[in-house]
Image 1: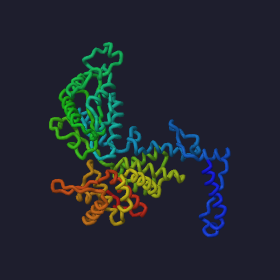
Image 2: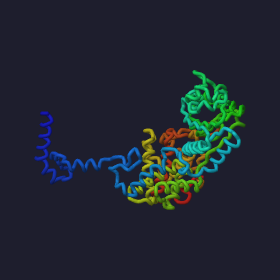
Image 3: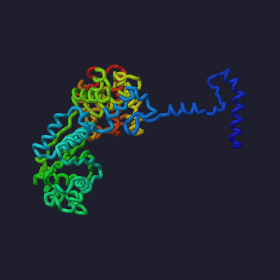
Image 4: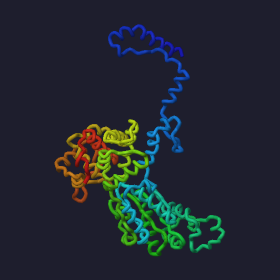
Length: 467
C-alpha cells in the first residue's frame, strides 16, 4: 500500500503545482483528481434503475424495470419479437406469408400422388418454414410427423431409430394390439435390430404399418456429407414406393436443382417429386409485412414497403430482418409508423452485424471495397454469388439486375475484388468462374450497397431492382 500511496500523493501534488499553468495554457488538459464521493442510497438506486436489462421476462411479459407497462410502444416492442423472427423459421400458419401455391402442390404430391418430395432452393428462401407449416397441416389430418435436421455427421441408424421411437407399436400390423409390450407403451423402434440396420430392414417395418400415415421430414439434407447415408435414403425411398408403404419422406435442402440434392439415381426418379422453392413475389412480400403489422400493431409507410421489397430480393429471411431492425429504430424514436429513415437506420445495424461476421482479411478490406462507381456492379456480383455453391460467372453478374450493366463495369468490379483478395478465379470447362473467399461477403456487400443507396436517396427505380 505504501507504493500506491506515494504515487497518489505525487499525482496530487503534480496537479496542485502544475494545474494553474496548465489551466492558463490549455484548459482542456486539466484533470480533476479529487476522490469520488461515496455513493449514497439514492445514487445507487438511480444507477441500478439505469442499468441495462431485458425488457421482458422469460414468460414473454413486460419486466418491471422496462418502460411503462401501460405504454403502447412497450407492448408493440414485445409483440415485434414474435411478428418478425429473422433468426427463426415460421412455425405458425397465421404468420406464414405467401407460398400457398407451392404448399398446395406439396400436399397434392404427398396425398394424391403418394410420392416422396424434395424441396430445394437458395439459403434463406423459406424451406424450413414451409416444412414446419406442412408438418402442422399434416398433424391436423392425423398424420404422424417426424422432423429431423440433418448435419454433416448424420447417421442413418440414429436418425430413423429416433423417428420410430415416436410411433406407437400399435400401428404395426404384425403385432397383436393386446400384446403386453403394446399396452406398456412400446414403439416401432423396438422392432429394429439392437445394432445397425439397413434400408431393407427399415423398409420391412414401414411396409407393415397400418391405421395411420407417417411423414418423415429431413431438413437441411444438403449438409449430409456421408455418401452411405444418402445411398440408404435412396434405397429406402425405392423400398417404400415399391411396397406401397404408408410412410413418405420430404427432403429439404440448399440446391440449384433436384440432382444436386439427391444425385443421379434413375431408379428413384419416378418416386420423387422435386419442388423448387422460388423467391417471394412483390405481393407476397407485402403480405409478409401486413402480417407483421397486424401482429405487432405497427404500420409501414408505402415508401418503406417499396424499399424492403427492393432490398430483400424476394428473400423471406431478409424481409423479416429488415422489418425487425427498422421497426426497432422507429420504436426507439417513439413512433409506430416505419418510414424510409427507419429502414436506413435498420440497414446500418444490419451492415454492422454483417461486418462482424467477416474474417479479418475481408473485414479489413471493407472500407475500400464499395466505391460510388463500383456499387451497382458489386450489388450484381453479390446477387450472382447467391448460388448453392457460391460460384458464379460474368454472365450471371450481367443478368442479376433488371437494368443491364456494361461488361467493362463488371470486369472492373471483379478486378477490384480480386485486388483486395476477396474473390478467387478458377477455370471450369472453358468457363471462368469466381467465388468469394469469405462466404459472408456477398451478404455484406448487398446490404452495404443498399444502405449507401438509401442514404443517398438514389435507390428508386431500378438501382437495386433484381432481375
